[in-house]
Image (cartoon, helix red, strand yellow):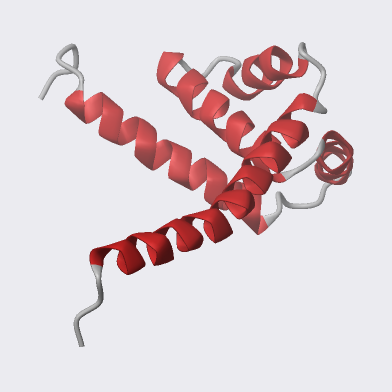
Amino acid sequence: MKYPIFLLMLLMGVAIALIHPQLTTAQTTTEATAASYPASERESFVNSCASGRGVEVRSVCACTYQKITQRYNYEQYQEIYRQVDNGQDLPESIRLMIHDCRQENNAVMRLSPFTEG
């Protein structure tokens, strides 16, 4: 069965209209979560995370911080920090974020014209 082009365009427009509000809501939620963090928290996190570990680790720490702020609001982040400070392991979700950031950083380093190899 062949549909007229205007009908296909209309259906495509309806599909986009139905999907677009969901995308906007997800983006707004992520932005609101990241905005709940104090401005100084990023620098503090990255400095603490990368202390004595080298320049490459700073980018992994910055990436991890970005992923954390996209997933957890500041209150949740503080609770995780308290738990880890009291001896509990990092949540699996954060360990996966670190892993992903390491892989992303390794891919960037391999593509860099300034690295050996």
